[in-house]
Length: 197
Image (cartoon, rainbow, N blue to C red; front, side):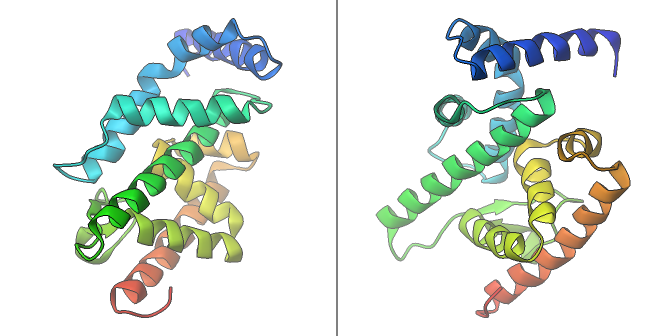
């Protein structure tokens, strides 16, 4: 990690701790420190959903940030915060997809494109609701693998940051990632074929 990132990480960690302890003045500092990264995460997610998506990156960041502020937990570090941010973005995207689906009834759910090298999926795309259901099912079998997917896919976290957050080796994270990709590919193919994932 470059020296400037180490300083930023320490400043962010201190601000996150102050915020989690109830210091409302730390909110602005945290938002300034993480906004750019959250917006990148949001833009990546929405780009996967293709053109015509009604949710904009700023709106996704704002909704995710509200969820983060509501749960105001004990954020131990930058990687811990972004792991929680991945959960928040996932919930916002799933809620938005459900609302969109409820409006359209019968029009189908717009699929999201999965980046090459990430989760294998039929035709290179899968709808966000199918992915969410598959992740819930995976979590019942292997919760840590599901968390790795959530952090990698929804937050774009690097293996090293995921390992730091989970308190395991990078090799263990990679093993979970490989297992989860295979498990989800099978579940998503089964869903597409009309089976149960």
